[in-house]
Image (tube, rainbow, N blue to C red):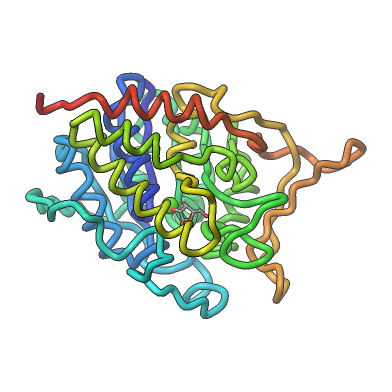
Length: 318
Ligand code: BDR
Ligand code: CA
């Protein structure tokens, strides 16, 4: 299958993306690297190890990355995250048992630099959290873009935002890192922003079907997505459904038709007090900008749910 490295800030939708990548036969998940984002780095490590153990894939190595953004001391503004409150779609710790495997391999950045240097075939990078690790790898060796056939980023928003009125969380959390990645000259950069992920909502009925699979992945996915639906329902009634942002990226790897993309210029605002972290997508027909990202504008929720149901029926331990 396609050789993939996931970079995550595990969170509930990251967890669904990890299970998808670890179980789909068309994906060879080489490793998972973690980064500060939804929750502190330590929690992203713990949650990621729990997920891989839970589905019987604890042999996939997990490496800890940056505990903070690459330039700023912390997030651009003190947006207080009430973790574990009713409208928190993540929670500090995933509701599955602690990992039995305590394999806490070393540094994510060192692993990524060595792996990209050594690989004899191009790898696919799928960062679905703040881009601090990927930007640091590029700071060490900008030529490493050559070892990547495609980078698939969950982040940004054109007509949609979430963490502020202007920005999407992953890009907002480390805007300078997002700027580095978007301007690094990757052969192919696919950006899956909120404009796509907000159209791939998963309903409670779909969750019930996942739970009915009776597999570890189906059970956990139903639990994680159910928590997201509860949180979104509390915050802004979505009618009993919720986006599962990060898994749209892993689904795209095996079924590109799950999204519709346009090749456009995309830049990141790292300065504006009201707009820091905003991805500025130039959709003007007469734009003179150079397209640098394949931006997903739509997503097929039905296809996504069919893929989830198919993949989460698998149980390596069975
Ligand atoms: C992104 O932020 C996080 O909350 C999710 O894990 C996703 O990666 C969505 O804005
Ligand atoms: Ca994430």
